[in-house]
Length: 218
Image (tube, rainbow, N blue to C red; front, side, top):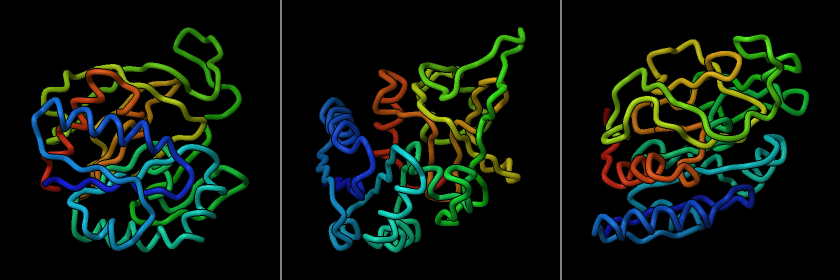
């Protein structure tokens, strides 16, 4: 049985993620068990771990530290495939500009930046923040989670802050919203997305299906 743990620290669209994973598992004929939990032992016993998140990073980090989720995520990263989603992705970085500056987990070399209040498209039209809705993702690096996902597929985004990293070799997907931003990245057995695969219809479900079969290597 393929055991998937969705980390519960009270700050994420947990059950929609779990339901989407259960759906792709059943559609693929895989024997999948999904649990939503903050129990360190149950997460340690899982084959794969999903680290979701929505909301303000200050509140997320407060709950992550209060519940020792930082240690749980660190342990998972050392030994199994991990999928981080939205604020889960941002929490992996070194720091965030949100809430006047927040120290994050520091598992990935990068930082989280604000889009700014004067964000404009190529035609000079002002863009709304948060970046909310569907946008194309250009696959800039091959990865097993992109299997059967056409390049420039559209995924669903909801965020006011974005990840920046100097380590461009980690970047697997880029989207444009006034500027090119990291839509996804991979670092060894971590795959992280700024978009929500569970809300992204066929392309997102295909990515989740690929995660169920990913061994954590590129």
